[in-house]
Image (cartoon, rainbow, N blue to C red):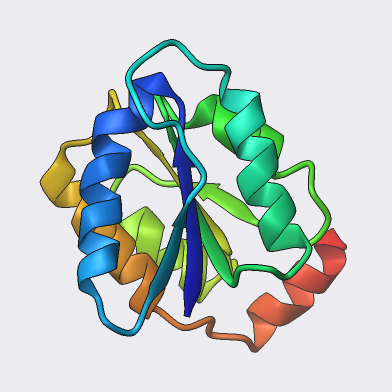
Length: 142
C-alpha cells in the first residue's frame, strides 16, 4: 500500500512520529509531502498536495495533520473522491473506515498525543470498509 502524509508546522512533530511508524511497516511505501520543519507554513498548500494525490489515485490513502485538523479536513474534502475524516480517538478512526470508507485520516497535532495517534493510524490502515448499507450512503454523497 502506498500512503502520502503531510502536515503544517503545528502538526510537524506528530507527523514525524507517524511517518516513522509508517516507514517501519515493511508492507507500506510512504511519501512525505512536508513540511520538513516547525517553521510557519500554510496548511492549505500541504492539504492540496495530499488530497490532490489521493484524488488522482496516486496514493490509496493519506494522512494530514495540522493544529486541530479542522483546516486540513476542510481543504481535503473539496477534492472529488476524497473522504477526509477528522478523527479524535480510536472509535472515530475505526468508523471512518468501516462506515465511511475514508481515504484520508486527519488529526490535530495540538489535540492528540503521539501514542494514540499512532494507534489511530494503524487502525485506520487495518480497518476495511464494511460496504452494504454504507455503500448506498456513500453513493448518495456523490
